Length: 333
Image (cartoon, rainbow, N blue to C red; front, side, top):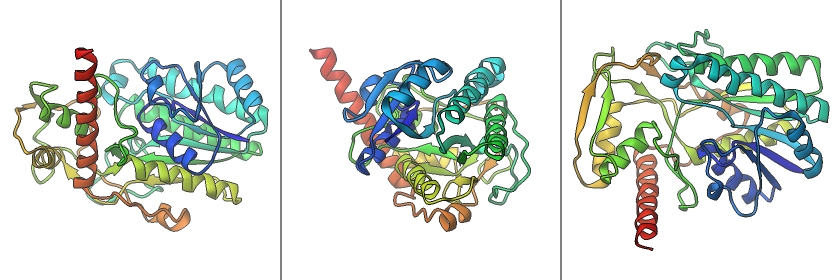
């Protein structure tokens, strides 16, 4: 009996593998390594290099490893890229998810956890957004994830498959024990970019849009520590195994920080200043996105442990320092 983690060589997927292994679960990672890194997969997990959109391969993996649950992270995640390449995003995030769901049904897998996004909400307004808020994605990325949510709901009504879709807000930070972190080259996550700039990996960074209707004019987001997010998935898996019904939950802390507040937190943690340039808005970015997280706390019993901006930034900066040291050691060797 094992858990299949698609995209498990990526940022969030690698943390999920660590959490599963820590709970004595057998873990199989399926990743095509287009953005994931083989070294990020914990050694105790089994890595299969391949595409989640390859049904015969997925079927073989499920059968040979006795997979009973799927946690699906594989996909594309950059909002501006989705605006430029909508068909690519619908292929990677929607079409391939459909193929995976079909294998799950044919294989009799009953538990499916899906990595969704707060981007399904679009412009959310000034109050924390609840799971039953109107859905109006502002980008193909958000739409592609929403389509998969719809497929899961329809499939669960027709077949013996129960699912949890977790709508992430802004994921950041790194494993507090230094085992994994955001390692993808050219990543666009704000906290990572700011940490790289603080350490001199980038000469400067940009702030996209300073005229939003927020207190300081920059976008405001609800940042969630990646370890707390992985533990939300563990809570979802336990919930489904205990007979819980299919459901959707927000993953956030219920409060937001602006782009400039995040940058200031990184400067404080690093103890140094760095150049920040102001630029025009990017397409598809809402002004404010903050989670209402009461449902996941009540139903899944999820209790975050790293829910401060300083903790998120500290762990992210520590990971970037580790990557920098590793790169320097490799260049010397």
